[in-house]
Amino acid sequence: MKDYVVGIDLGGTKSALALLDKDNQIVARARIATEANEGPDNIIGRLVEVIEGFKADLPEDARLAAVGVCAPGPLDHEQGIMLSPTNMPRFHNTPLQRILEERLGVPARLEHDAKAAALGELHAGAGQGYNSLVYIVIGTGVGAAIIINGQLYRGEKNFAGEIGHATLDRYGELCHCGSRGCFETFMSGPSLSKRYAKLKNTESEISGAEITELAHQGDEAALQVITDAGEALGVMVATTAMMLDIEHYIVGGSVAKAGDLLVDSARATFPKYSFKSFSSRLSLVASQLGEDAAILGSAYLARQALISAS
Ligand SMILES: [Zn+2]
Image (cartoon, rainbow, N blue to C red; front, side, top):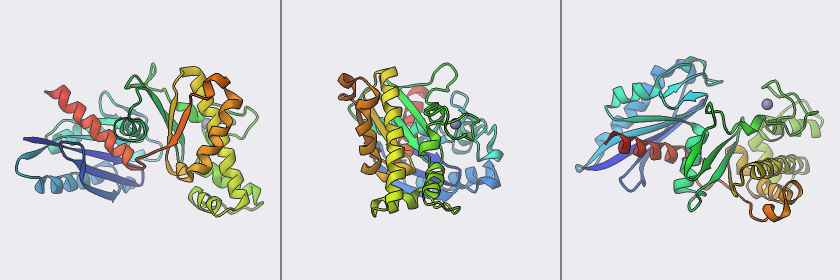
């Protein structure tokens, strides 16, 4: 039998899933609204329906062998439990891994979404050929996942990677985390909106995506906001690199859609904030897989589940 796996990216607003064949090629995919306010049973039921549909279309010599799912943290990846995802209160303490195993009758794995995306990029995207890398996600929030010698580095309490709430400017703006001048206050989508409104001297805020669009059209305030975010990203990479001696950085998430505008600005700051001999070794690239990174990383974990089950 050929082992097919499913990778699921369970998000706060939407969920995406894909079926991968034995060569890890995506052969079917789906995207559905999470409707997080309806609670976990609702979305799990609909995910299982989609997966049953995938199964019905499998070739005769194939079987669904495992599923991998990633979700917003914090979560317990060992027990497979969502703990207290910020914007999904009804999902607190949901044993997602066990429920999927019971409903589908195959091994399942649960991982934090940024960590899954990092694994996706490592094995199938912009991280191929590297042993170590840092994946930085800039969206509504800012976080990172660290891979050292092919393995996720988790820290003592699975807390590694919270660089979004390390301080860039200790006299800076208050952050929702309670700290001040966090990297996130310079880079996240909502922060870009605030900064743009301030530059334009207006109360009305437009989305990070709209600012990116305006920057590509040459809007000066938008360019300024994205350039500033890029510089903050550059300091983040330089600082992380000086600490960990990791050379390769991948930036994903909605703000990364700014592409070269963001990445070039970040690259230009490396020599200013790290040893010159070191900054020349640093590489920073935009995510290659985009939203598929988390799905492919989850599918990779499904394969791992299969290996440990056999
Ligand atoms: Zn913060």
